[in-house]
Amino acid sequence: MDFRQLQYLTAVAEHRNVTKAAEALYISQSALSHYIRKTEEELGTLLFDRSTSPISLTYAGQRYIESAQRILRENERMMKELREITENMTGMLRIGVSRDRASYIMPRLIQDFQNVYPGIRVDIYTQSGQKLREALKTGRIDLLLLPGDGKETDATIASQKIYTEEMLLCAPKGFLPESGHLSDPHMLDQQPFVLLKQEHTARTFCDGFFRKHRIRPIICHEMSSSIACYRMAAAGLGFAIVPYMVTQLAVPGMDVDLLSLGPKAVTWDVNIYYRKDAYLGHPEKDIIRMASQLFSSEYLG
Image (cartoon, rainbow, N blue to C red; front, side, top):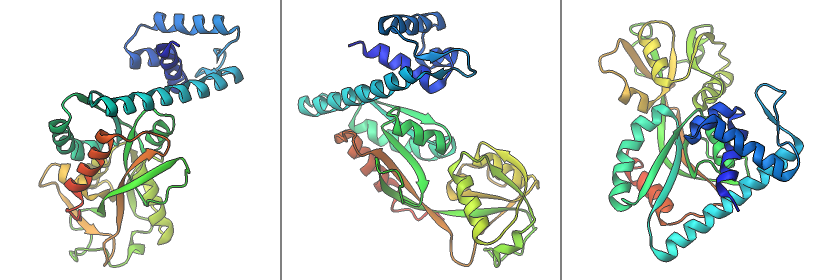
């Protein structure tokens, strides 16, 4: 079985664009196009519909990709089991995390992990929460580090809490009384906000907070980074709601007030997610344990 062929075609299905898939695979577009044509000729059917933009899967293509993903996952599971049996701790561990959170967590976590497992390369995938969840479900990443309420709706996914983090309001300097917290969330009604785009987990949190307190924000800007939201608030362009870790990454001394979202801190949990059918060997279990040890002792907020 040509596992490379399976990997190549699943990459095309993921990116829905041959050029982007070739870039991600570090091969030429012509070589990838050759693999697609060769596979379709061998199967006697088209896998991709080139008449759509972006390209889409035919029905045969959908079934092929579903089977290819299952085969690749089973091969990955087998290789991990053999790694445990032979104690040959080499290979790759793929972790998905948002770009901002990667800057905060991964330098500390990877340093500890690679002291124990120098033969295992850690690949970090940074995307929005929505895209990272899809990557976990399809097996493109092994672990996902993402905030949430821990109530996983997908029966194929399991999670483990790593730490609790406070969500903070960023307000233009001097706009609100210096009480340290927001006395009445509804005072934010009809105020300008800089928010993340809809596909981000923190945006889902903000939308839920607004609904709960019947706040109708005036959305001035939508960004792809919580740090960008923080800096926009510091520039006086609106309010922002960001995780505590963002305040540790931002440039010190910025002209912004940070307040709790109420008399009692409003928090969310940062979890590690993984597929229930995935094999968790010593490296996977140890990096989860290391993450818990590094951050669970810190109440972030």
